[in-house]
Length: 337
Image 1 (cartoon, rainbow, N blue to C red):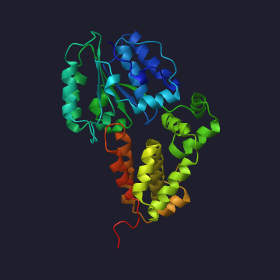
Image 2 (image 1 turned 30 degrees about the horizontal axis):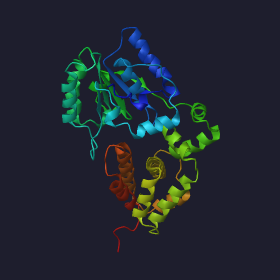
Image 3 (image 1 turned 30 degrees about the vertical axis):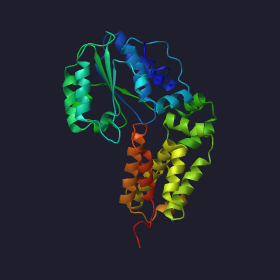
Image 4 (image 1 turned 180 degrees about the horizontal axis):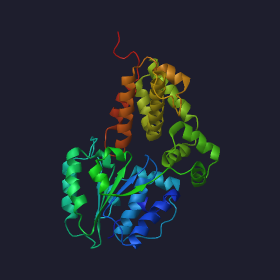
């Protein structure tokens, strides 16, 4: 029985069509490389593109309709479900409670792609995100990048391609995915341009993150998130209660919002210390005041925690404990008599 096609491969976000055409053009010209580095901001649709490309290579290609927002978000939430995978599609990502892709994971996949394809077509490896590979894992991958078998292809997805070694980058053909313009996002979501502009100011310009926020259909959520953090900083609410509330409703959206405002707060402090004056999303005054007594080092640590937790969502990590630790660290008087 043929396994179902991964939901994210059943359609394509509309702004990814030019990138797909570039890939197909290389294939038609006989210039299709065995390693591709697909880079772009988190939430821009790199995985959607990679899965469509993978199924073209695996011989299970079909007409690709537009992937609608709800389908895209649902598919992302279950993307690591093994039941959705093709037997010749190998997927590397940080395992449960891990932040990196280990050398053992890479070696296991290399051994798998050295064997005959189950379906006799090709073998495809998706690495998500590629910068999560340890140094040893990256070194182990290099030999396969340098001497790929004729029927194996590697798709490296990266939010931060600069973190990959130059030797890895130089052996990959590149596809850079830029965020679509606000009008394109608004048309895809079926919402007014003003709604997209408002969400971009809160959480950035990644279309899938904007889609998640738009689906929440409640602009007051950002006020609620701000009020929660202010109350935690003023010791007026138990961080565990806030963590439980965030777990029940829009965890990813809350973390995206939090990370963006931590970044803005840190940039504002840098500007005040004589550094760059560019602050694209100034933190709300109430939030700025709530964090005023927290040292910059703590805010850097919080930003890092939020980023790691975002990357680990859906991987089996204990989100409850991680979120509780993250929010508890915003207590200004924590540890003081």
